[in-house]
Image 1: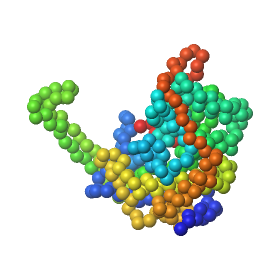
Image 2: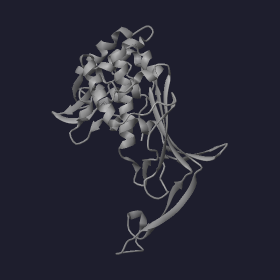
Image 3: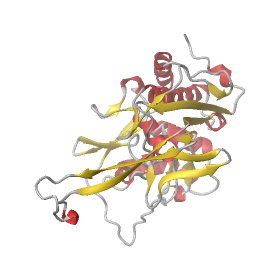
Image 4: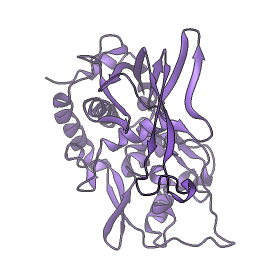
Amino acid sequence: MSIKLDALSGSSKLLFKIPLKPLQGSRFQPTGFPNLGAATYATAEGLNLLVESAQSMANRLESVCWDEVNQKPVEALDGISYVRVERHGTYLTSSITEAHRLNSPYMLKGKDKTFFKTLKAELELMESGPVNRKLLADKLFKFDVGTLLHGIFLANGDLAGGRLRIARAVSAFIEAEGVRQAVSGGVKNDHVNPSGSAKDGFGNVPFSREEYTADRITLFVNIDLAQIRGYGLGPAAEKLLILLALYKIRALADGDLRLRSACDLDVAAASISATKPAGFELPALAEILPAVKDAIAACRSKMSVTTVAFNDIVKAGKDEKTEDSPEDDGSSNT
C-alpha cells in the first residue's frame, strides 16, 4: 500500500501526540541538567516534567539512521547525502552523528582543507547580501540532507560571514504530566574496609535516588511542512524529506526507547494518529521503507557522500578565525 502524502497538502504542520508508558513498573528517570536537576514546572493542571529535551530528541532521531556496527547509514537509507570523516583511512565520525552536523570541527578545522574549500566555493554567492535560502537548501541537500530536518548553524566566519542557518523542521520532546517524586536510595558497599575514606573511593557510601511517576507521558512531534515546502527544492526532494521524517519517527517509536538506565519507555497505543491533520496515521515501517528507498533513488543525482580526511587540528594563529556557535542549532549539548 502506497503512502498517501497528498493528505498533507492542505496542512502547514504534521503534529503527533504519542502516548508512552514505562516498559516495566511505574517509575522512570527524566533527563537532568547541570545545576538544575530534573526540569519540573507548574501548570494549571499540576506539576509537569520534561523527560527528554528537543536537543536530545534531535540526536535520537538521527541515531535511528545510523548503523553503528558498520559505521554507515542503515541499509534502508543507503544513498542519502552525508559527510564521512576518516582518520588515516579509518572511520572517525560523520555529519549524521556529529552534534553540530556540517559545522563540526572535524569537517572544517582539520589540516586537510579540501572539504572546507569546497563548501566555501559552493556558498560564495552568499558572502554578501541577503541569504538565498533556496540556494542554501540546495547545497545542504547535496552534502547532508539531515540538516534540512534537524537544523544547522554554519557559524564559521569564513563561510558567508557565519550567518547561514536553518531552523529545525522536525522537533520532538517528551513531557510527563501529573508527576510525583519517587525517592529511593542505596549504598555502595566496601566489604574490605567499610569505614575507609569515601573521598578516595573506599568505605560504605550511601546515596539517594530520585525518580518519578506520572499520570501521562507523551512524545510530541512537530513536522513543519511549510518550512520543508519553503525550501523550494521541488516535489521529489520535498517527498524525500517528508518520508525521511516519517521514517525517523516510526523507527524511533518501534525501536529502543531506553533513554537512560532507569528510563525504558514503550508506546502505549496500537496505532499512531496525527492531531493535525486529524486522521493521518503514521505509516508502518514496512510501508515507509520501500517508499523512502524510491524517494532516495529519485534524488540520488542531487546528493553526494563526501569523505573528509581528519588527521590533525590546525592550531589557531593570529590570522586564523576560530568561531564556535553558542546558539542552538538543533543538536544536543549533553
